[in-house]
Amino acid sequence: MTGNYPMHFASMPPELFSPLINALQFSIKYHDSTVVANGLESITALATFSFEMRKKEGRDVFERHKSSFTQLLTAMVNFMFFEDSLQMDLIRLAANTFLALICAEETSFGVVVQQILAQQQDVKIRDKISHLFNFLMSGLTLSLDTATKGQFQNKFNAFLVQIRSLVHKR
Image (cartoon, rainbow, N blue to C red):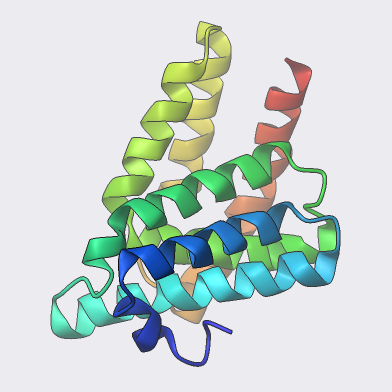
């Protein structure tokens, strides 16, 4: 849906864009892996377009929808940490989506990570989560090229196993 015409979505007024974001958030929580995959692909298309336009033209085409991208980042983190609908066949796609969102919204990503850390009561768990995010991002250039995606996917697999075991122990 969004993959074919991301430039049209960038020009949508907020009152039309917001329901789209809500639908995408719902799709990644859904129990059917096809629906989840379509949602992840749509989010990836929007985030990729945003990142590429910023690199190419030096402007944020989704500037007026900034809070929506932060919502998507938060939804992705919750999906990855807590949802049982993240099946093995979706991990590669989830990694690509997460990387695209991080590239598109680097500042918002930092804010979301800080919010996650602030929510942790247990200092040891907070430190472990912080370490895992640092591991995930260390040595990574913000790019969506094949090499970076491969590097991120390898780290993402290890990150995901460890982060899910931490948050599911609570």
